[in-house]
Length: 440
Image 1 (spheres, one colour):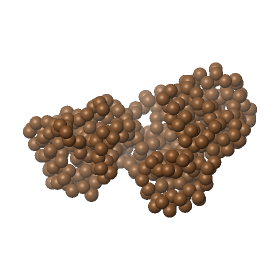
Image 2 (cartoon, rainbow, N blue to C red; image 1 turned 60 degrees about the vertical axis):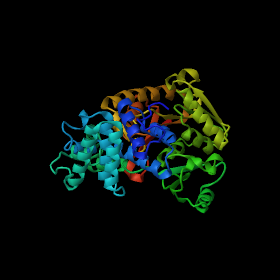
Image 3 (cartoon, rainbow, N blue to C red; image 1 turned 135 degrees about the horizontal axis):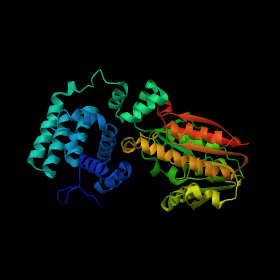
Image 4 (cartoon, rainbow, N blue to C red; image 1 turned 90 degrees about the vertical axis):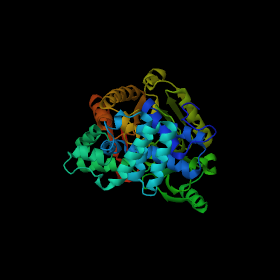
């Protein structure tokens, strides 16, 4: 694989080295941590416990990035930013262990860091790493934030989010809710599955899962959802392979419910990959009717096709094109239901993709909201009278959500809308916005 770490010949990297390789590459190349981590874990062939540690170190360090740097800066001459990327990454993941993880013995974290520094750098670097981390341990009780920080800065450092983003959320939702959102974004994401009601029902599947030793509870958000509290990787189970369920967040399951497609309808899913909402709609339609599932990326069409096949569905037809051109490809007013699950900033799924919060800028929100409005305006021409168009995003930014829908309704009085915003702390699920727009 590309980007292999510095290694002793013939040895496999440890959990901490694997985490360091991922963190360094994420920072240097802007790679996605989840994709990169999977790639490196396959290569390293770590034990289950070590793979768990590497995963914890990658996501934990990225989640707590600005808080870690804030404290490390007091121990590093000239500050963390002046260090080589791999040295910076090593100090960050070591600090994360010392400050945030109780179960890891401090001496193990420090010793391993010093050994990695010796293998990858020179004596000066290993000496510096050793000195910084032992200093952190000695002064552990002093690592508290000052009392007099302005509100946005305090929340940003306490819960590790960019200050500009915290300031936006305070403005949009108030101080208390903004802090709850940031706190929830650092929780590990829940695992939930959606029952394929064409093959089984929720009670029967929960019974099977419980008998097999899984700990499961019904979703309180969706009647098709099951929250898996423990039971291993759901994608490796026979239930998944047999198409008895799909892996999907509870908030996301609400989208197909709001589309409420009926058997025999003609439905357009404009930005359909990876296919979770498409297949949910097909199940709701009893697999009777037609769903055009479109995505702009050819490789993502393959993902939708795989899900459709695994679940045993026949009503879905996949296509590849830019969603902005769909209005030219299909006759006006030719769909009963349209789902526009629009591209967005993704700020509702930070707990699954912690790098998002550091990668995005206010300009990104502005750019994406312009595209979202253009898409909504364009695909709305394909909706028949009395039809329903659902506009959804996995963000909590009002400029991408209410502002888009309200502007659309003002400019197109023949439509009316109801919408809901799910925030990450409310149900400990993904943040989601869903607007149900009906044509008169």
